[in-house]
Length: 258
Image (cartoon, rainbow, N blue to C red; front, side):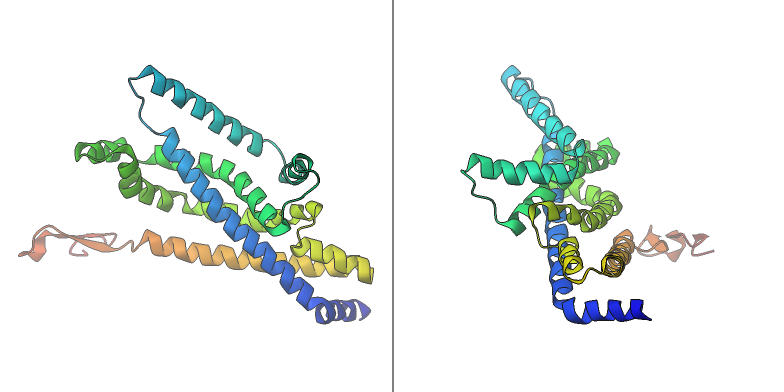
């Protein structure tokens, strides 16, 4: 059939364009997600700093909280496509028409957008950690920063991994909006191929399959990582070094696996 011939011709003739777009899509999504997670962790640590008795410190804290809240609300409340146009062309407006390099601009846009969502995800993760963890860390002389880095954040990362994975998958798809500023990701390449071949349906069918393959593969890999971090459901607690009767098998039905 001519339909399948057209698809074969598009792939064989423009596969380098498709691979280039795929590579930029994964690069921007991956780096943007990682930077966004770092932003979220940083904001989470700041927002959970204990209240100070000094009025000046409390005043500074209120200002910082206001800035963080405004950042989260603005970037969660506006589409990434609009953010792309405002940031990219806003920079050009402020610099006499000189624009940002496209790939760094795309990474920056995805990063700060993801950071707004990650801030709330991390905040929820920190809240879910038992308060006794904080109290135990403070009781052994840890500062708030030390407690967060060594005690709280490792638990938070484990708890929020599914949400982080979901954000990564979303970013793979949402990089398509960066075509409005000329970033040569997968959707941009598909649009260019379509204008050269006039095979709109065939071209975007190929792209949809590529997007699905990427998100499906990434989802499965991240689920395997999540299972590894969760650990075994069946393990033994040793209550005594000398007596096997003190062993308790968790997940195995009771004492000594019975």
